Image (cartoon, rainbow, N blue to C red; front, side, top):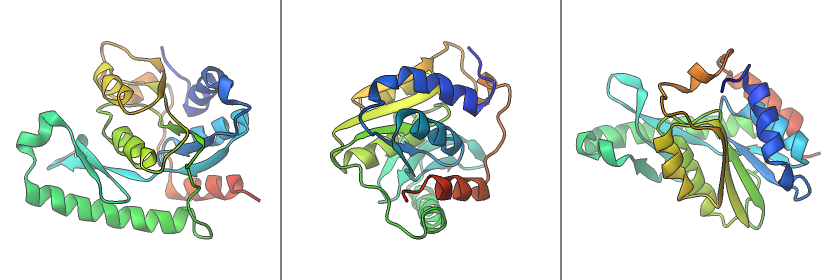
Length: 210
């Protein structure tokens, strides 16, 4: 299965998530790539849109390989297979860097309001794909701590390994494609352009509650 772009992926996800249309769900997108998808899902399902800020902790010298991830509170997830190679000093340094970046992004993305409260709501956390699953794991952990009524993980594509990891953390996982051969999220999209901070700011501004 391949997707034309993130809009196509979001449209297909919206069909699978249609049972939530009358429940006014809170759509939490993982920036930056999932924010355009979150806009479509919020419109299609009659829900609200916000972001859940998490950051990948990259391996030394390899920005594409995730040792784990960190959320806004400072909670760190480290993949079991990377714990033996994770130098505590390096992890602490990367954690501080990524938390500083999340603080900047939070101030820029939602400057005039507090993040929307997931408590007691159906919450759908969306990303454009899962390779290691690290950022989604951190996102689900962060949202679960705020006591949603139901926590749903929604992605167009995921590696089998990542899907197995997140299934234990969400009440429901909606994934359209989990191929046995998975190299990178972008391989399943015809167009997979980078989403800029400016785009995220504008999309969230347009979607903000009136």
